[in-house]
Image (tube, rainbow, N blue to C red):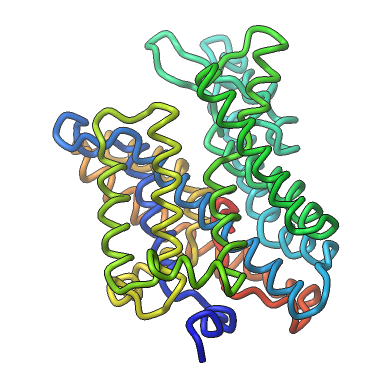
Length: 387
């Protein structure tokens, strides 16, 4: 069996749950700041975690669709969207409901009315409910100069849902070259607008709002898609094998990924683009063969299990972080490393409970919309929906 045949017949990529684990721990790190930036100059490790999730999502979803197409002759969009809805919607809207309840219980001013953050959350609810918050939810600064936009982390879910709405029909109905051309055009628009205008957090004009919408497609997702498309073809697979198919490929690109995440002069459009490209090579080096150079540590059971419940961890992590902060403050503990560790542990426990007692009820229904030909190469899918 050739390397491509082994890749095409794989039912499970054994290293990817660990990559999800790394990504979600990076997100929690960002939101707890356990080490001062001057000690460990991670430029934006939380954004790096989301970027890794995005690359994984683009790769996995496209691999699923391509393999269904190869086996069944076409892509069943109705089944695809039913599976995605069962995976993503129940927990997302349950957590959104929890935040809504907490806002009405806790976000009050001295007169008993909703405070500014609470009113802003209520104003943003239609955008959260329709996955358009990455277009219309703007970042607000409080009197201390800090961001105070409740549930703002859900922007990545909106980006994911828009990807699901756009890409599968394009892949289903258009010839491959035209579909890839559409993808490259969307990616080019995002990059041109980002480099030209920079990030627009508070659009003040209609033009700025349109620019922000044009910037919303994630380049990282597009790169994951391109890798899936390239690896699905024997000829391009063979060419890429020389770069990402060697034993040294995964440790090399892992080190390169860590280096760019820690680059102290990041947080620029060029840095994000370079990071996306490097992450794409890293993910490809971990899936192109199961026995890659760092496969053993990436299959460590704890890492894999955290990866399985990483979607729940992403959705629940800010509830856990805030609970830990309140609890440690009450007992007089101010250690940020301790807050980080406790936040990771509590987030995992909450996500594990959610996965076992809530999400599984819906995940079991996915089998009704999954023919043998459409079974994903990776049976467990986690964040942002991130897969």
